[in-house]
Length: 618
Image 1 (tube, rainbow, N blue to C red):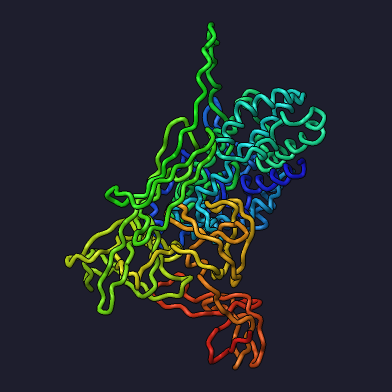
Image 2 (cartoon, rainbow, N blue to C red):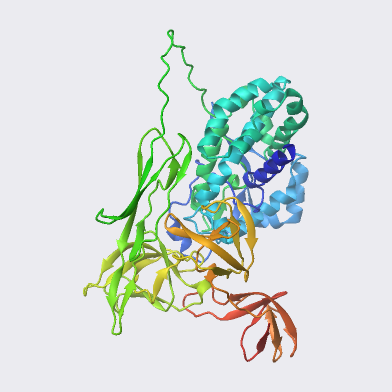
């Protein structure tokens, strides 16, 4: 069990302690600085310029108010990018203000420079976590990621607190730790649905005194040592402040910081560039500003209440008028146990509204869960009637052909805002449906928002056609026996339907066998035969088996390039050279003014897929 605990602690620390970009960052804006108040101005350019980064610090909220505890004592509050790149300047600074021997100046310096470069291309309306997940093509929302990290944060901060108290008292008090864990930590971990086995891994009550001190206590010490290595100023806290450390409140505050927009951490400078907050590089530590109120014991015994009983959850399937479309389902279970409802595939209807309480816990009160569906619209054609399902509000659609974005629901050349070129599947323009309208002739239109985050069109709004030949939901609605991974970065397999608890990674080109398809809010997931859940996003996976050559041979001399746009030539390849194909991509990925072209990914870069220049060999 000790080995398992140590592994979990190490993994979780790598996620919540950041000096670098190995995981999405945890950030907090300085309330005393002028943050970016509007992101439209910053996003009007293809990329903003970050010319300075504050030196890293930790936030502490104490009885004296919020204070900064810098990681680098005596250093300037911020450094320019030019200073960070200047070896002579950095050596002089380090000589005059040595850092704590637990810190690595090169890691901190590289992290500050990497953050300055990376954040300059971020979507400022999205959180640091969301931007990092997008950059790594991880199909998990920032909220889901934060929910996954929160239990780990609570546990690590609690272990740190216990070590700090022990260091100050000189005594390992297992009984006091057991009581604190039972009263303050276990209830929150259960609320976050952490498995009982994981909760007990850290529970001092389940270990003998000998095993706890000999084997488990070193794990607590390891958590403390790693956190102290990142935030050495933690050791400066007084005994009073240490006792008031609240791991649960810390984790909840940290979650808010993780989900705050990137713009909160940027301050615009006089030359038009920006300074990045230094707390974007460190752990946020929060100390409760007050102790829980004392409770006066009741002088007379309180009668024992009647034990609460679990009540069922009733699941309804209705149309927009409230008419029943399928029989109700009755879910039952133990009080406090988790329940999960599922949407149904109802012929000729499309799910319009997924309930917020689709999953939850059985309580002493009866609960209802309602799925709302919309009748699919039938459009008459010259040959036969075809069903044109209208995508529910809040879902994501993409364009399969060249389409226009219009200012009004009545399309005309005058009302056209821009064209979106026809693109290959992985590069198709995406939109979230925000509403509906009808043209003067009664033709239904989608009101949409452009969500192509790496394109200059991101954030644009307007109207597009609802014709299924041009726009269609981005998530598969039906099960397919086999699917092929088409995303160049691959996709992950998860243990949970909300795409958490990663179990495997599947590379581009792998063919996977599907057991079934399930709904998750307004999206869908494929369930593989091994029980893992993967995305059903059509830009990342494709139904059936996608054939691509395993090798190619050049018919004429060609060049190899660093990018799929065939820029930055890095090698000349002679005629009749055989190359191994490791994947594929398309040019002009984020440029919707142009169509795209297939490229083969080979060792060292990309080459043309033009059949006049290369031929496939399987």
